[in-house]
Each structure stands twice: as structure tokens, then as C-alpha cells.
Length: 217
Image (cartoon, rainbow, N blue to C red; front, top):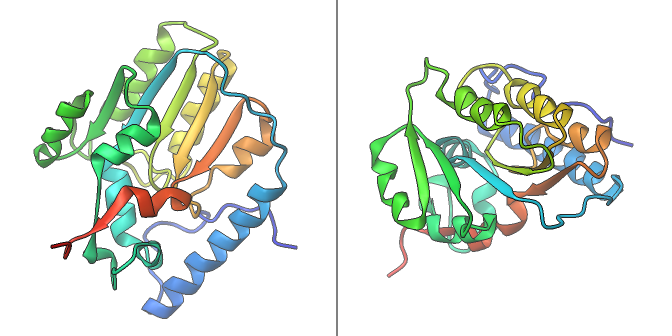
């Protein structure tokens, strides 16, 4: 039986010795996550709560590019560099008709504003991501749902627990949390510890709908 441990206990700077080792590590993490996701209690109900969508687009895209296996889910892709994210499809998947906030690093992502996202540009050494989430929390609107779309769980830092710390603050204030992330990231323990309040929805399961190959004619 796989242990319920964090795939991110190793530092993100601990680079495997080879591509094959990287694939094996990621495969093991994904299989462990799939095992536990299937066995966690299904108690979360979406309801009619107001949803606050927060997307770290740069993190989703960069962690997709760094993955050794995710590209294999996209027809025609032979490497991660063969694919790109369809932002329109991603927005619709997250429920894009709501008031949403996108967190991005680079101005090249600006066209996503046309999809209804509000942009917050930031550098790697500031706390824009943290501050934007805390602004919503400080409004004191408990009973809402935080829809968090991220990639690997890091909050623009090397701290693997960055998002976990913030999510716990939202839970303490009575929020519900819906997490959209890659399976190899570490969020399942939050669902296990907070049944009915937290749900993890792997982006892996819908990647074929969210990504396209660069060589489409």
C-alpha cells in the first residue's frame, strides 16, 4: 500500500540524475496520488456559494513544461515543448464567467484579459501572490469557495508548503476550497484532513482538453 506522503518532500532543486530517473520519480508520485485520491471520502458538494477564482498561470504552464510525463496525454506530442495551453479552454474549465483573478509573471500573458481575467504582474521576489489571496481573506466573507488553480504548489518561492499555509487560513475562516493542480503536487492531504471542505480536481484528467500541439496545421 503506497504511503500517504508528500511528493514534494524533496527540494525542487534536487534534480534527478537522468531523464529516466525523473520520469520514474514523477510516475511514482502520480501513482501514489491516484491511489489515495480514489480512496478519499467523496463528501464535497459545490453548492451555490460565491466562487473566487485564483490562477497562477505561470506556475501551471512552467510546471507542465518541466514535467517528464504530462505531455504524453496529448495526442501528437513527443515532448513537453510540443504543447501549449489553451487559455480559453482552461478558463471555461474553471468556470470563467465569474469574477476572476489571474496571477502571471510576464506581459506575454496579457491577451488572457480578453477572457475576463484581472491580471496582477509580479516579480519572483515580491509577495503579490500572497497579498492578493490575503486581500480576499481579509474581506471576511466566509462561506465562499476559493477555487485555486496552480501547478506544483509553490507560491513563487522555494517553499513547498506556501499554498498549504494560505489554504489553512481560508479554511479557518469558514471558506471551502477547490484545488485544480497536477497530480504530482501535494494537496491530497488537505482533502483527507478536511473532508467536505476541500476537493482536489487533477488537471491531468482534463489535459487533453486544455492543451494542443504546436504543429497543428
